[in-house]
Image 1: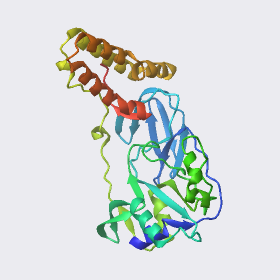
Image 2 (image 1 turned 180 degrees about the vertical axis):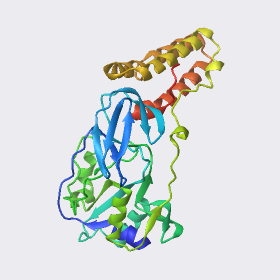
Image 3 (image 1 turned 120 degrees about the horizontal axis):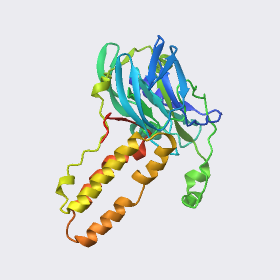
Image 4 (image 1 turned 180 degrees about the horizontal axis):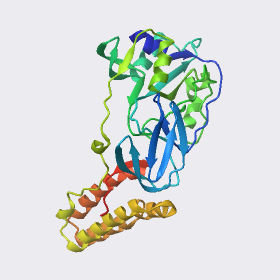
Length: 325
């Protein structure tokens, strides 16, 4: 089993093709064998079995309902959207590394293959032929409600077939990597490349069957919607700010943040720039430092606030409390 997964699936000799382009849309996916109905706000989405649908989701706060469960989530108001799949059934998906290698190249040695196995594999606990075991495999699994490209940077989405081979081309020389021109490996040409694909669970198992008769089962459990972790602002250091004026100013900024969570559409985009990317906190830090040169209480509190805001800057889709503050 280990050899088949790590070698038969990880290493494929190169042929030729080109990589599919990416889309900036969201999808709701139904990988089950039965149709489902998913509600986002007042819109019902009827999704047939083994089907994903594309949706346009307005910036701001939304309610998601499925199968008697519901939660509040936020679609961040940014111009640069990222790909994401909404997984209301909390089904398991597989993020797989496919290593394409020219086996005729003298650099494709057994030592290189052993090294690639080590650095491109992760330890995973799963059931193989009714036995629970932990092995190193070239894939990760997830059943997150929002499967984000920021977490799993796939080149091939679900329902997009992996090619049988790819054309290996050297990286583009820029001012930042011009030293590659003198690199012997660059001059010899590329002999390997790794591409990543996102699979539905059954699609991946069908893929494994091409190389192995072993039966594998994943061991992820589903967390009820109500128990999923939520992003929130909880400032433990706010009370330590020694200057009441600046304590109030930070409280006011937190209030603006929660107002932004309630904004919709273009207002959310504008609010994002003002609240999450604005210079107001930097200005306040500078003012406080000049007024209280040896007092770091305001800096510590605003740093805590920045840390808790960071996920809203990194990701489009975040589970939040349905609370106005």
